[in-house]
Image 1 (cartoon, rainbow, N blue to C red):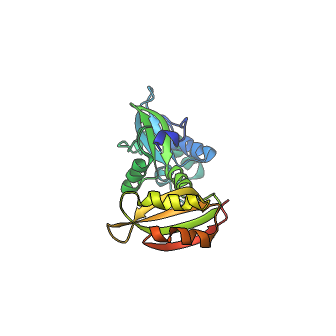
Image 2 (cartoon, rainbow, N blue to C red):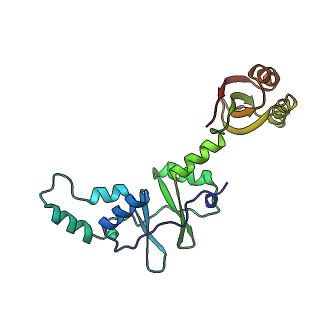
Image 3 (cartoon, one colour):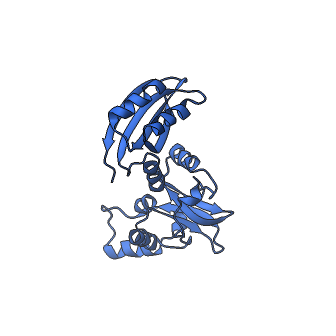
Length: 217
């Protein structure tokens, strides 16, 4: 799965001379928290977030009048507070790589670029939705977590055992096990009862960590 399949597009952008007031109003209207800043040719030159704008706005303790505050917000351009060194991704980047960049740099979203032009934006919310899909969180069935030895053919034998008793694997997630020789896998399985499933997989797993029924939504 790649960034291009999950990014939001077309993306809302602003120019460097856009005022703080305009940017805040746009974020409120569109229910977004970041705006890429582009020049006249459409090339990315910066980004502003809702937090950037709120930090730059006068605090409640200011001695300015309401009219002075409004005048300041309406004339102060975002180019004075925007982040100029922007983390970006491309449409063909694997989604997990984009998630790693966001996690490592503690950012909530990144513009997606094609050359210098912004073609979309990917956010932590988009990544979270994919996480739900990977684990079949909206599917009803049995949620099974097992510890399995690493090795060729082991997962195939496990899947075959489920197939032979009429089960259907809806989703699969893989994580590090207790040591380098094992992996912990989380399955969402339908079409089979718990007791029958446990009996069938017992010869193929190191241990069963958890099993429970999930109704989905």
